[in-house]
Length: 150
Image (cartoon, rainbow, N blue to C red; front, top):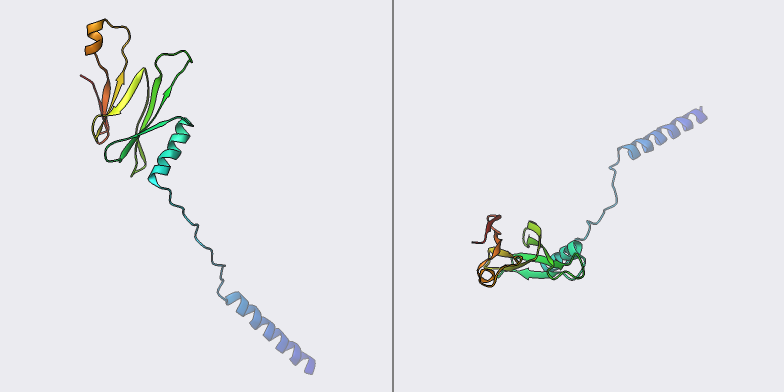
């Protein structure tokens, strides 16, 4: 009888231990959240420029530095007189690409804080007409519209 009491007690203790283990709270090791390194807006613009144009690109900010023109003059052939003006207008705060285009024989500049002008070099023109004619457009960064130069 002594052996059966011992085995019963042993079985009950084993059952209690198993129940404690099964019912205990499962804890997972505490994980530390990933450390986010904040990149400055200037560095983000630089990274975008490198991603788009690899090297030799230009950054031209508007007056308030809220929008930047990331551009590169690309020559399709080494003997080209005029290059293709490839550019992206990028809003710094919202990290949004506003406009992207490549224009042969063109240049770009900020007219004011909200308007970016792209001017194309016309083909052959006589002396007086060359001074008057202006081709291209003006892109408005707020309304995201472009209008022809008059």
